[in-house]
Amino acid sequence: MSTNEDFDRTRYLKEFKRANDPDRMGFSEHSAEVGMKLVESIKKEDLSYDEAYASLQYAYNLIKYESNFINFR
Image 1: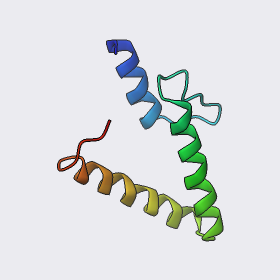
Image 2: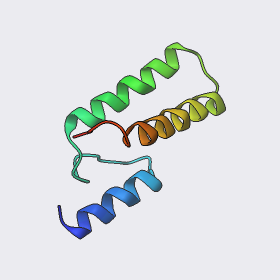
Image 3: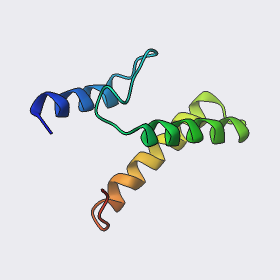
Image 4: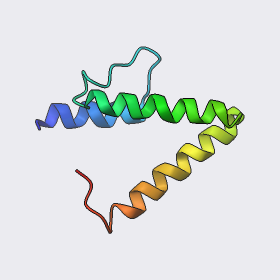
């Protein structure tokens, strides 16, 4: 992966825009599908915006913590 792609990925994750294209940033189509499933799950749980954001932040922190112990692709 080039330095530009790495920078673009980091920027994408930090500066999410309404018109976004994860594929253009080098992420797989599967990544976008999983993201859509997460949003659908949040909707089904009827979480408020703040609760949804907190849940996603918790998931991010958990993935980051677990990445120290397991090998993600």
